[in-house]
View 1: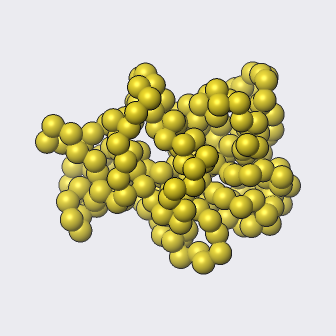
View 2: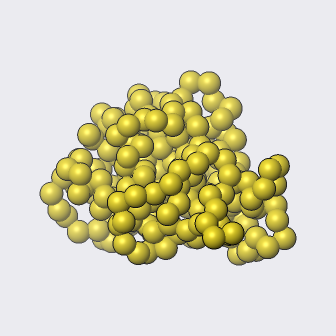
View 3: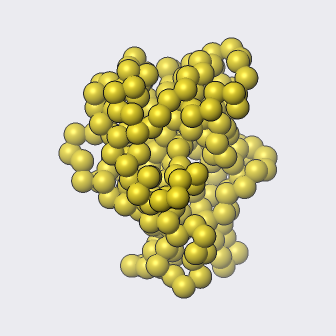
Length: 212
């Protein structure tokens, strides 16, 4: 499969890149700083600007799927930058004619109990609130689109470097529990779940979540 991966050198994007290449997919890594990546088989590295719709649409043409793992952490206005990026991305995917968009979502919009999202609880860390609010708004933007085949994969509240166990549990809009609290997941297993979805398209026009 020919995959365009936005944010391929980031925290989650790097794990997705490694997983995709291990499955012998062809990956176009679209990054703001190409020097962070080294050339390897089946990997094309291109510099991009997620806010430049025209450039991005040209780079996306010919791919079977776009996987987006970009974030707004480097911008002072994290929430505003993230939403600008999502809107530009949607326009670029449409213009390029790519049939599917997969997005790394946030955990904040998952329900910790019926009707209560994690982001709206007093315990939610203030340092991640702008990012979580942006991810929640992006999910709603996608849900409101009638003409785009999208999937959002939200990680659990804690995602961390670890090992690829080869298995995970999945759910839809609620935090997956373990031992009386939220379950976690390794980066490696999250990336495996994302690539499983890229290959199987089981959650078209839906958000889902995974955990160990």
